[in-house]
Length: 86
Image (cartoon, rainbow, N blue to C red; front, side, top):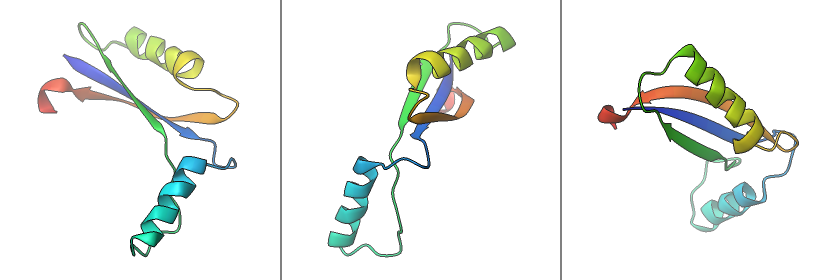
């Protein structure tokens, strides 16, 4: 069955406290060469049947209305993966 993957990230202009904490931990661990870390969310929606334009449109609407908070987050990608390939 196909899986639609929705990725959501904090808006670029907003502080990402989780990402900042991880970036600090990398520095403390001696990992250099990384200027920042941003942490987002990934949603995997398994589709019962083929992924049609209507299904993609519905998931796009869900991404905007339910999976993300448009005040502080952006939906950065929506893609289709073959679950058998995972």
